[in-house]
Length: 238
Image (cartoon, rainbow, N blue to C red; front, side, top):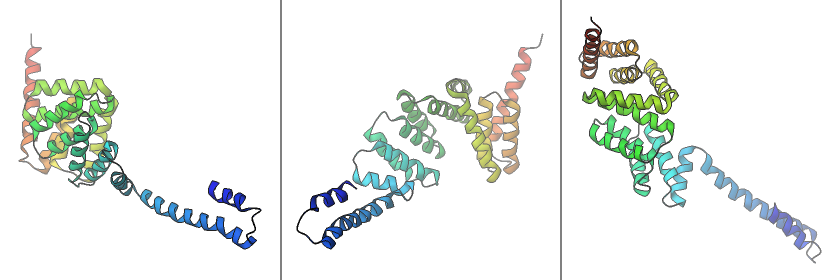
């Protein structure tokens, strides 16, 4: 607007014919419309926006994190590479290290996942991310059979942000209603166990075994729950 009306003011009073004077601002306006239309195209969706951002900027951690998260959410494991790039640029970026840890956990690389979660925690994440990290550390330690560490991690998750832990549990439960899976019910049970909802955890493990009677993690978790309940009973006997 400044260019168009400014040009009109500059041209006013010159010996140019009126039609020519009128066409100059219109031509400028048309050019700006074309440029705006081209730029707006990058905002068509988040994927194009962050991809374009990476093309025109350097070392943009936010763009790497966002694009990596979008790809992983769609099941595209290429997203891990974007988080790794963010981690290389900003060694103490908790979001990227937490995302790398989550992907390593899904791949069964448990110790590597623990290491990455440890880096994320030392990077001073906010309360929500800290709760998420500790919640999943609790899951990993249960998977490894290290129950004291699992209980402590779950406790720290609740202390950090109990609402975030409940949100994680609800999200997984909703997903399982649509796509039931033994691994999903085991994960749900592990998180429920971490919040001391033992009956609900036992039900989730049992549901995993209904879907796959040979699913080893659920068998081990149910066995551990049974053992813990027997131990607790023995402790309160006169």
